[in-house]
Image (cartoon, rainbow, N blue to C red; front, side, top):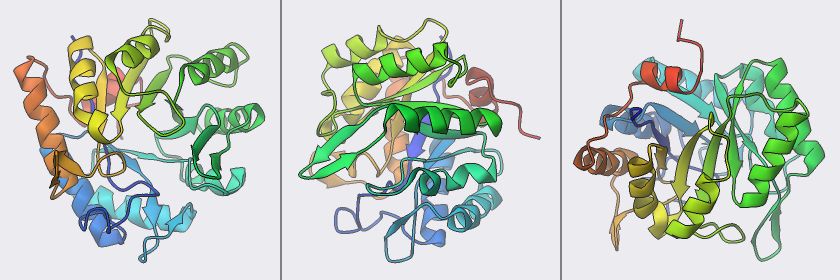
Length: 275
């Protein structure tokens, strides 16, 4: 079985210090959280960025400052900027971090009701536009799917040349408006991707660790972090992203699964070796 790639989604665009005081906003806080996750065993940092007051931004300059700062402390880690941004941002605003030519970036594969009047809009033309830009810039997309229909969209656009193989999916499960986080839901998504594709599971809230177990046993990969869940266990706030990663490492060891280094993760994900 392949070694386990652990992704740390260290801050997200929505979670606040009111939810957990350790949620990072500033450059220094993002470095602290990335380093804690890296030291614990994460080989990939999924990155949103904020202004110092916590306001989400897709500013290329802000991404560059934070990416450069993380690189100083974690020189070989894979840094995966989000192109999700926040509800209401334009396509080009969301794509700004891809101008920095990261190894990977996220590509959301469908529209989702986020609750209330918030709609996370990703039309077919938006997905094509993002996919083409990533091909032009040599960036591997992590295909974020919140439901089975988004897998179907990704496969259709792959056949049309907007997404290249081998594909890597991120099953984001348990989000309001998306697929649930039960084992049956995981099995449904897992059975819907190509045999040569890889996948990561991101369980939201209480689904984080049960779905991590399922992915570990199945041979997939795992995402944890404050973006998805701020608790180490029921009612116990995690003190850092590193604590969440450490828990996944312990679970993986119980099932005999070794943890991938960044170099090994690059090989599994068909990325170029870091120069």
